Image (cartoon, rainbow, N blue to C red; front, side, top):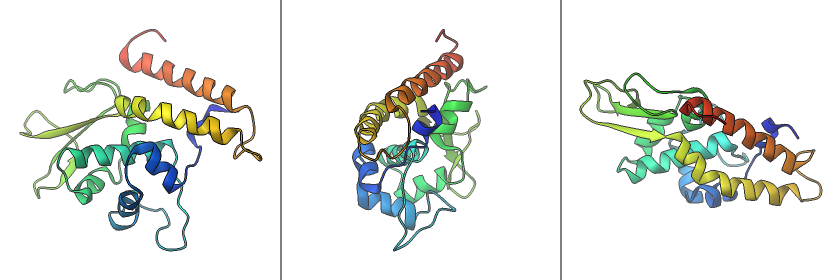
Length: 182
């Protein structure tokens, strides 16, 4: 099994709630009411699934809510950006001293929370992708292993080998981003 199949493994809303700790109702609000995932079909009759990328964005939105942002503010700040998974894979140390995979958010002139930061900003929130991944991955891994044993399996191939290859890629990226050996 290719590691990209692990990255693309799809989970139901109820599984997403279990994996992220975000309630199913709140996930529904993030999807339909606050448009956290623009461009995706919404509304009654549409089945929505969540991949690792979306699970991490849900967890980040909830972290922002836990930091006292309203759900609609968190969704608006995360809407349209690469999100924590993309930051984890692509972002290294920032010139402002943020660690790899950190997404800074600050208020714009209209008071909305937006992705971005500068030394002139009085207040900002930093969402760190690596801890979100490290928190979610053991539960996601266990769920993939469980679902991989189903007949028929949702994805073809050796699930354990796919997970091992995916984890090796993540370890390599982590080492590159943090300047350490894999």
